[in-house]
Length: 240
Image (cartoon, rainbow, N blue to C red; front, top):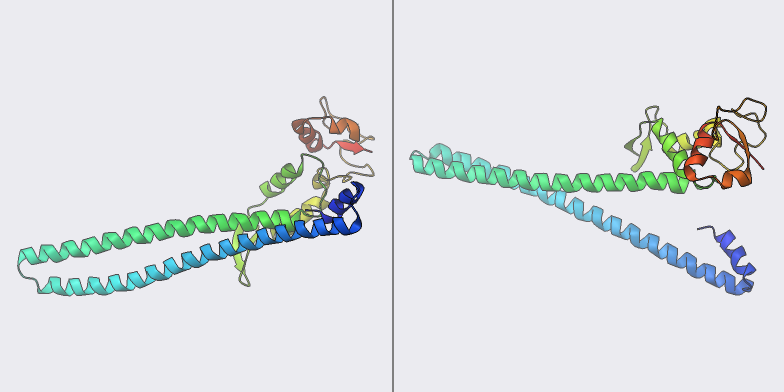
């Protein structure tokens, strides 16, 4: 939420400075309350999962102890009926423990996947691209193209989960570098200002369509999302 732009809008609608600021304060407090609630929910989920893992570890210890006791009884059991009974008990415990372990492992993996996806999305939205002004409809294309050139994986650094690529560069660093490249600038407002890009006014254009040519801002805004993407990927230049 851009509070500066919202304040201008409210004042333009005739609100006094005091009323506009009060309204903004209310919006900020509501947004902040939502973030705190989301954080608390995630912390509660993490604690519940840790408690389950702790309980499973305790169960594993008890299982190992019980299994040893049953094996000791099994050695003493000469009659075949006693032997079969203890073998059955041991198998029952082993099956139950394996099922509990699988259930917790599945829940852990699901939590980890959701947690890592949230951290990755926050890194992209809140840090890597928050200051970039994308051409309408091209933000997702910019991110997808930059991400496709790298293989990111999550790792723990100083107790914090971060995503790094094959060269140990973070998502934030990669998207920043891409935004400064000629290819990345094509997705950003005024990214190609000054000419000199591939397919600009002083170079031959493409063979047809919207690729490799210069186009005015008004004409570009009239294109569909697919045409905009094709134009920018083909090295097109937007003139103001």
